[in-house]
Amino acid sequence: QVQLVESGGGLVQAGGSLRLSCAASGSIFSINAMGWYRQAPGKQRELVATRPNSGSTNYADSVKGRFTISRDKAKNTVYLQMNSLEPADTAVYYCNAVDRRPMGLYTYWGQGTQVTVSS
Image 1 (cartoon, rainbow, N blue to C red):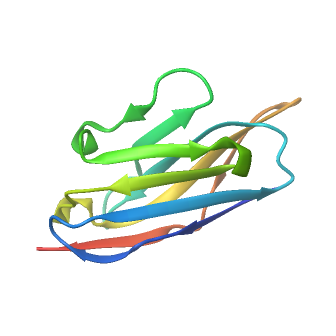
Image 2: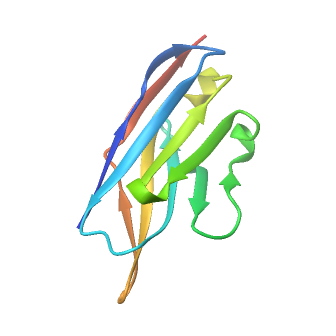
């Protein structure tokens, strides 16, 4: 099993910044990609940003130019720098990791961290 532990959420005023962190641990075989998703009340979980080992970084249109995803592959850690935050960014943010094992790809989720942006 792979465990993902997120940190860095909180309450911030509109226009402010937060940095989320997520560290993967446990029986990791080979992390293929890590990313962030979010879920606002009454809405479906949506992609925020993903960063694969190879290929392009992917951002939701709503966060392009404001959020930056980065990874420390040696530490199996992913970060999300969020600038110019808006009330619409209020949600629970979930870390995601895809582990490539001999049997196939396995997806893991963190417990979520709350981000609240006040107007």
